[in-house]
Length: 338
Image 1 (cartoon, rainbow, N blue to C red):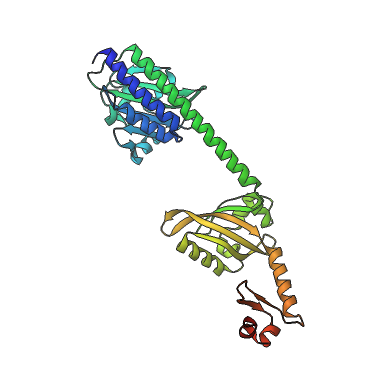
Image 2: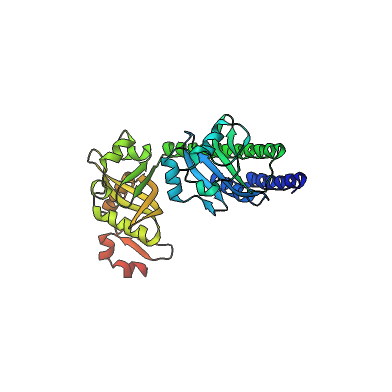
């Protein structure tokens, strides 16, 4: 293929990746799809992108046309062994460089089947002084790579790196906002397992249970059913409702605080994932309704001891409640017919 035609094909792939950059909000999907687009270019037989954590650890490898992410066994090997030579060199060398054949360190590389003995282009994903990952393109035997092509690919890797960087900033901003909401919410927020282990709670929940520190709550209530619930059977009822419908609204129960005080709590929760073997994760919100329950008890007591007949009807005239004198006077049948 003539150089002009080859450059046109690379520009076509570049435009496709740039369109993807504009719309894609997940960095791992961006890298996977970018690899898939690049291998459609004549002369590129395979492509891979590695994603690094902020600490420089390998967290993800996308391969094409290997149908997406590397298998767990490959990633595990990459985690445990030394970084592959082509990725390690990409950290040290700017731009896009050509790797001719194998490095001495390629023999034990878990990606060897991907590129064994083949020429490949490699470059790092860097933006604002931070390396977010690296890219590898395996070349077909007939591919003739010139300086212009390497320059175009270097620019493309920079664009991908900028997008990954932007996505990461957006993700961190969202996480920070969630943390601020979680920490500052006036109601209790929690995440637990169905086995009774606390995964996380916010300060409002800790205060509700008379603790100063969140960590104290998590160690104190090692088993929610036995230690938090005044009546463990209510915990089982709660879990049964969650299993049946996936969510529970305004579930009321009595809880024991750190000082032994009994409080009334109202909880709305949902199942967020199934961990298998009958275990699932729960998240939800809790409010302290102790004062409301106390007021209701006082009202009920007052009405029950009132010398007057007291009862309550619905808007449709249905009998809802009555004190003993109302029931003595005729109860539901008499009052409902009035």
